[in-house]
Image (cartoon, rainbow, N blue to C red; front, side, top):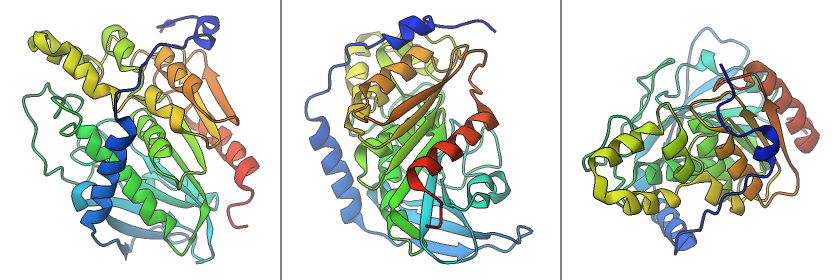
Length: 326
């Protein structure tokens, strides 16, 4: 592998001009209000299995349009309120199996994992949430589904699911609602940025090698999928470039990041050819957070820091939240 983007010195100065689309806040306020008005029940069902020292619950909660979305709640056995970590999943994956997600609960947190609607058949233990909404013509993958307008775009539904999950988690009796963190790798990192920007429940955000940022540069410079799905789409729909970029601007993590004031720990990999380092720095530099750090992995690709970054997160989060059970 080689460095795939700007030098670290250039990245530290990289601040692209990414104008906000008109009516951005109104768009998201109305979208989330509609989802909340749609109602729906949060259901947690205990799961029997070989994991004996933690409580595992099958979660169903109402997301966009009240659609049922699956997840896991993995937590220590006692019911005392404690800090929570909400995790979003990388591109093509689903919530998987509970045994894939034992770290945060073992560290003492309530850990909630969100399934990603319509995904879950690309890797890992699979997913279980349908996306019942249709799409116009799209390139293979998820990145161009409904890209004709912000109202029909696929990630409008995904980001809204994330906000509605945080609404649910904040009401869990086992959760201290003042200490909820969001995290995820790649797509999960991008969703965590959106969730922190759009939900008042987020007290810390920890995106790793986050996808879905700086669309204008990412869709023209990134050599590998998923960003190349947009390139493929526009190679066919040659007359839609301006409209597509206008749609994507409502979902760009580097635009939404300006609405995040919670403490933030980012990570970036300088040999990443799936998510360009410049796109991560674009979002990081737009944060309104005064308490922010970015961990740089100079010799890694899209795997980023892996288990080393998880250890970094546990230490960083403890410095801000204290002990999970406080």
